[in-house]
Length: 211
Length: 102
View 1 (cartoon, rainbow over the protein chains, first blue to last red):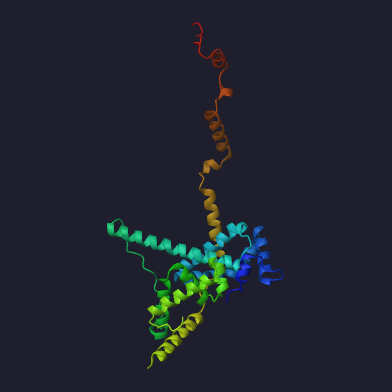
View 2: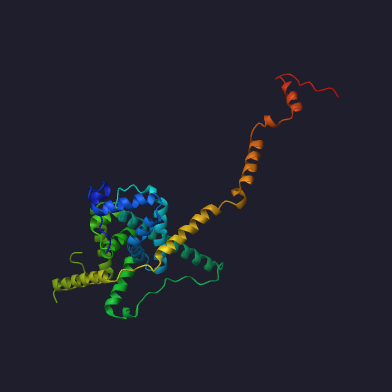
């Protein structure tokens, strides 16, 4: 379960005093700024599952998700002084995880296209890397197949819709929390989710009555 | 089967699929994730230092390089020999410079 985040209003304004999560975050950030090794260890332990699973949901590859999660924590360590505390720490981490995962995917796509181009021209003789197949034997069952199909279609959504959908349905964040991560409004998140669900239902052939 | 029944079924199917998605176990990193993050940090920090060639990092070479830069970039009046300095002192604009007798 992801740690609770303050509401949208709280992401733009400092949280009211006495908010335990906010206070814990502030203490942790202060210790990190002083270069505390223990604080960094605590940060990683507290948020590693959240960061990793978000990256995994967007990339569907354990290796890529691991790479992105490491990159996020290294960036946090190196840029903690730039964290102004206007948003919750977990919001910042979700923001880094989603943006780095999307960047990573763009790089992979570019590399793959380049590899295709060079192999087509005969510069490279090696075969093209194929995405790993993580299909479990249970995927033979209808439900699992449906879920796998859903995941394939999620990965084809436009990036913003994909992030909103993953944060809502896999990370179980509220609309306000998603808005804070995407740095947008709750209405925009509703719109993103509406379009994402409509597209997915269309592809999965669920006729929408209300999405 | 009426149209509303069909929609109700598809809504239920969709809700069921969403529940199924939520029930999936959350992906977790492999054990010793922190150790791997620390190792990556160390590698990056080492790489940031190593981008300079080794000789630049040695103070003696750096001082020599600094002196060389000063010598070639300034008007090097301080380094000019006294004889040539007195020669150029005799120069006045618009008048030919008198050459020293041989």
